[in-house]
Amino acid sequence: MGERSEHNQQSGQIQRAGFNTRAVHAGQEFEPRTGAVVPPLHFSSTYAQDGIGGLRSGYEYGRGGNPTRDALQEQLAALEGGNHAYSFGSGLAAEDALIRALCSPGDRIVLGNDAYGGTYRLISRVLGPWGIANRPVDMSDLDRVRAAVSAGGTDETRLVWVETPSNPMMKISDITAIADIAHDAGALLVVDNTFASPYLQNPLALGADIVVHSTTKYIGGHSDVVGGAVVVNDDELAEKVGFVQFAVGAVSGPMDAFLTTRGLKTLGVRMERHSENAQKIAEWLVGRPGIEKVLYPGLPDHPGHGLAAKQMRRFGGMISVQFSGGEEAARKVAESTRLFTLAESLGGIESLMNYPSEMTHASVKGTELAVPVNLLRLSVGIEDADDLIADLDAAIARL
Image 1 (spheres, helix red, strand yellow):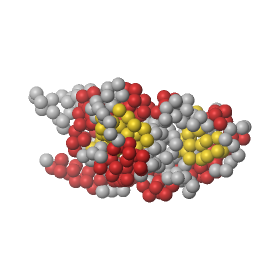
Image 2 (image 1 turned 180 degrees about the vertical axis):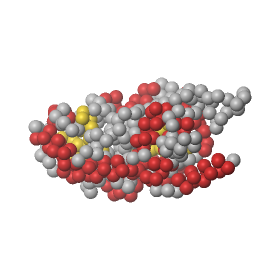
Image 3 (image 1 turned 90 degrees about the vertical axis):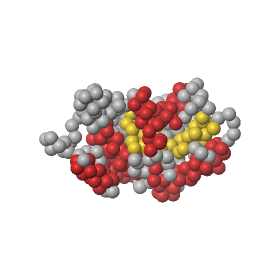
Image 4 (image 1 turned 45 degrees about the horizontal axis):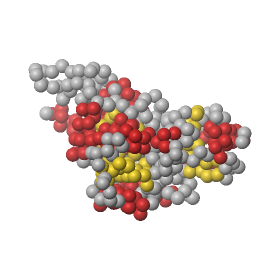
């Protein structure tokens, strides 16, 4: 009883601490037997019982609980300001578990019309045949959001799904206003916070009900682990998500949880460098020959700049660029850089270049969510900004 009370008191102190302190210490108590400051990695798939049903600290079987995964979940909840967090084997596994936990055939999901292609594919092609309807809408237009959420028909809006900044069009959506719209219609607001990360934005504090992450990206931060997460405050929602996590079993493995925890500890310092570099590169790109448009919320002329400044701490490490030379120019630049690696994903310490129309968003070609063919998405890493600019300059000069 004394140990549990001491643990709860320590956890309470950490919850009230600053972001970087929480990132380093939440769920990371030293190992009591040896004093190891890094909690051990638990690979065991099953746990000895003290008699039938006599579980030690609640552990029974690896799918239902694992100390390494639990430590990550405590860390994630602390950084998003949530009461409960659940870790999954991928971002899409997290989204799938969430939707199946909260939706039934006949429900509708209203989502952004430039959502991540994998999310749309999951909702439309996997869950659609099960009876989940979807309605894409421009989330930056509150009147359209209100109309879509309250639209009649055979289905009823259960979830409103927002990415802000959006992938890859970098639109900024008003989380608080959309939460009010969703709640007025009896729906729940889900915010995909992958692009911003918990360091730059905390949707639960702005009125959202649920936060989802691809922890593969900024949270892991090193392009060496795949994972996803769901974070909530409400106990009833948590129970439903937790049940699906256990019953379906798409949990993160212990090594993946360990690597994600390790990356998460440096999220704050990494996001500062990502944001600083991206701001410099976005400002450099503006007005360059061959550049049609630079999409970055840190630029004063971005339509969502003021809103982003209000609900984010900084503007992040993602930039999208459209080329006046069309598809040919975009493809040529994507295949000409040396420091920016042409690859899927984002949020790692190294800079990546992506051609969404044929890569991350190929699944939405021909739909309302299709990405312009002259657009490249840059995930700006933590290298020296001058070197990254020189790399882009050389590639653009070849046009």
